Amino acid sequence: MEKLYGLSNLFMTVFLHNFAIFMVVPAITDVTMAALCPGQDECSLAIYLTGFQQAMIGVGTLVMMPLLGNFSDKYGRKAILKVPMILTIIPTGILAYNRTKKFFYVYYVFKILISMVCEGSVPCLALAYVADNIPESGRSTAFGIISGIGSAAFVCATLSARFLSTAQTFQVSTLIAVIGAVYMQLFLRDSVIDDDQHLHTPIISQQKLAISKVDRKFESNKPLLKALRSFQDLASFFNSSFTITQAAIVAFFSNLADVGLHGSMLYFLKAQFHFDKNQFADLMVISGIAGTVSQLLIMPILAPILGEARLLSIGLFFHCVHMFLYSIAWSSLVPYASAMFSILFVFSQPCIRSIVSKQVGPHEQGKAQGCISGICSVAHIVSPLVFSPLTALFLSEKAPFDFPGFSIMCIGFASMVSFIQSMMLRVAPPILS
View 1 (cartoon, rainbow, N blue to C red):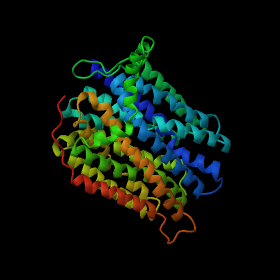
View 2 (tube, helix red, strand yellow):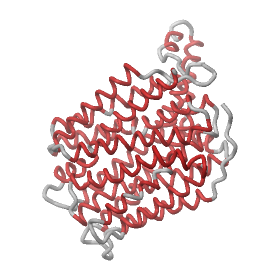
View 3 (cartoon, rainbow, N blue to C red):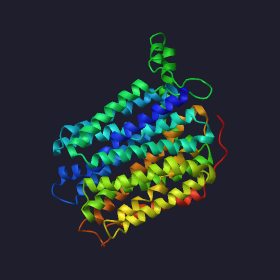
View 4 (cartoon, rainbow, N blue to C red):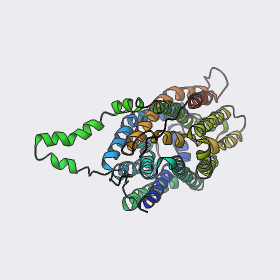
């Protein structure tokens, strides 16, 4: 009962956090364009700044995700979860107050700095929490459910943004983020692993040892020094198993495509079909509803029948199709039809996470999810450097040929690489808890 109670509160925490984060997504493109290029439908500066932001966030999370994962194994999931839950309130709070050019740049700086530490950490720690409390046989379904909770929050958030003004969108988002942090602090219990040992060592307990002797001070700092070797941990983790190495390659190229599409699609739709906040919200609602239904209803049925590896390949195949359709969109209706493919391509991320989770022991779940998030962060660095200039070029008047969706087609080829690699993935037997 204690584990079920903890999971239910975790699901609510994830829902509130994702609701606050996703609510501003349909509006942020219009806010950026209005601040940097008022009255225009195409703005290379906005594309380059978005790309730079994604790259900087990727650099930060590459270091921080394995570090936070290690800390959560040592000090408990809840203790580390407090950091992103509280800090992510600040950027939306700035735009809730004002959205002029001056305040936009303040938001931009805070968004980069905070996201370098916090981006992706809530899903990462939530997956580790679920792995602590769910046996291997049920993890693919459980990971699908927690992704479905995130998709449900995405749908509710974008629907809310659809009927609110831009100012109200950021104000409500900030309020929900505050509620999420308070709810987590009051109701979420720390994770407990299967052998009934708490994944919790108070952070201040080691500091008390420092006041007695020098050697004790050295010992108290030892876990910190070890945790800071993020790159070494990352390399050793991915070399520990051939299955993990293959899964890391799939995760990298899949996220390379995801980040590229996220950074390019909204600007492409605004330039090509003059989409605004409401149309972005409509598009995201369709995609979110399809993804929620798939993760909560279809994936629990298909995962035990087909297995995670096959389901991963199916998801990545339709991910490719989804991107190629966007790239050749000949009508404003095509993106809406393409968004329906999310009912099939949302399988990929939960499957990757579940495969990796089963390759490590119960005391390494935080490290495993943190390292996978770390390799995904490399994609956050590389993707904007490649695809942001390409998008800006082909949406401008200086394009070498008339193909506005060329950058999105290239993103589709990156997704195809992950699909091909997933076909060669061989899943080793899981490590029993």
